[in-house]
Length: 472
Image (cartoon, rainbow, N blue to C red; front, side, top):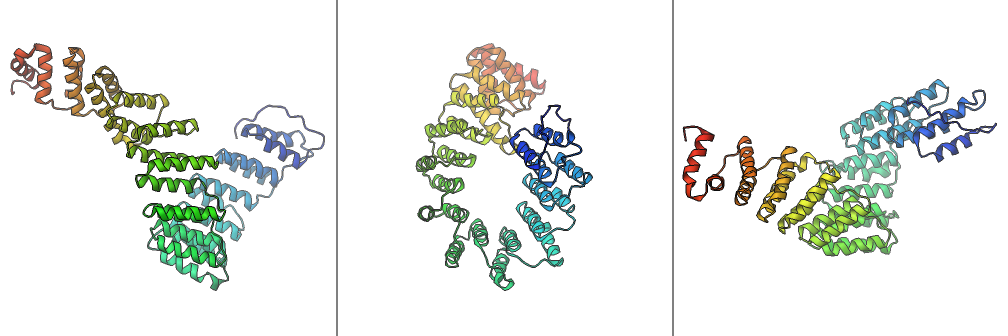
């Protein structure tokens, strides 16, 4: 474990579990919480002893901070101090590892449970399904059944969720759903919601709507998740019906969440109605639903697609004001739109902002990264701002961003026209070093800049001989 703080805590004569629990909960800093935990027993060695309540609390604090190794150290400490390690504590570690997508560690911790209950098996089964470890999940389920655990609503719900993830197993999910009553299990709201969500993701919206009707006749009330699944499925191809479901859920006093609103906004943007989507966003905020990264990204993509640059910038700024950090993909959308509108100076400003903000470039966006930089350099040169274009060009080379032939040629032409021959020759040299073959116009531009127009052919012959040898 890390070195513990030497802070002194003044304890009363009688230290109770509730007092220690209260003090640990009050500490937002994990290290200070551990100090409280340690000092409670250290200063009262003959009196207070931690039990599974305080151990569970400090382990929970560590898991929230993603300090998994230290959390497991406390499990070892519980064993040494003869404090029972409960199933719930170990399951909390399993859930934490599931949250950070480490299914192998989930299984490792599960094996430490001496006599797992049905709850433990269903919890781990659910984590494996959520992590799309379906082969392992199905084996785990079969093992659970072999141990004699009977089918239950929670376990069958997870099994149906697993089968609903794939078009080839969706029929099996429906079959198990229909057979649930034979096992004494009544489908609940979660069962129906899971199937409706799976059907919508597989574009089986008609079947999902029929299941919604059945669900209501069986006395199961649809949740916001159920309606959101349907709205998301319909918003792709039948936006009007999606809007009708949105109004229906509000009429039933089912409060839409951020994902519901984002689905409608996505549908509006895909149907070329991004300004309506902006109005929808305003309604969302009025009802005190805070837009998330997906909401803003969807709307920004729609606005840029329709070349609504003013509105796009407004959304971009609102994201940042809310504390959300735009990624490289969103910057590209804005910069690309500026390039299309031939506002290359503003595009360059956003490139500078990306550098200042330290926005990481993912492999998937590297091609766009290269394309945008080249477009900005060429646009600046053609807009008579080649000096700034040269700055962007130098930064490209410094970061290993590929400069294409057209960009080299535009830069050479600009500096030749401005009689800045040092930069023209430098760019030309770097073009040749990069293996780009200058075209006849580029040769002509450079020779005109060096020798003047009257001796162009003589200059071309001379430079060809220098660069390529006597063979030319």
